[in-house]
Length: 268
Image: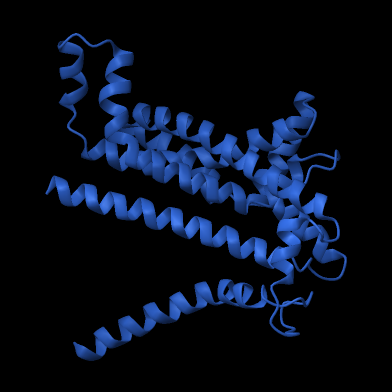
């Protein structure tokens, strides 16, 4: 038993090292001015200074890509959370084969490779005659983010007392009031988790964005990095930017987990 436990712990630590080692190297090499990630030219915070004061080469391009990325991720995540929550409530009240069919359809976008999703949406937008740009990218991101929200909200629906909604209606609440004041507060943890996951998926996406952004020069961080790498290396300021984004997301997740733990402790 002790050997099995030790092997399990070793496996977990190995998995964590493999997952976080690339991020660790990006953070470490963000404190050097070398353009190549594996080249250390001495400790320096100049790249951080260049990032914040805008004195880097092509600063407007990188900052524009960052703004586009955050804006698209925020808008897509908000709409995906609303659509995913509504869809989860509908799926939860289905039964039998209808429920299984809807769950199967919901899982397809997550299993489907990103490149197939991107090409399919590209062909759809061309067929419908929709000009590619912000609108098509946001619609595409909503499409692949919504199923993740559904999967995060459904467990909360299963844990919820099925009679609460009917009780609110019997006490005089309208369906909209019962949904807004009774169900939404109970579903909020799942909605927040779905929103964060959608936001992260949108930030991370490349293939779908690449095929749906058109030719108007719209760049997100992923497409900017791709174009930058094809020129023979990465802009040094990308390393501190990635480090800051990782730190911000880590802090947000820690705050949310701590709040949820405190709420569970109070309930117990």
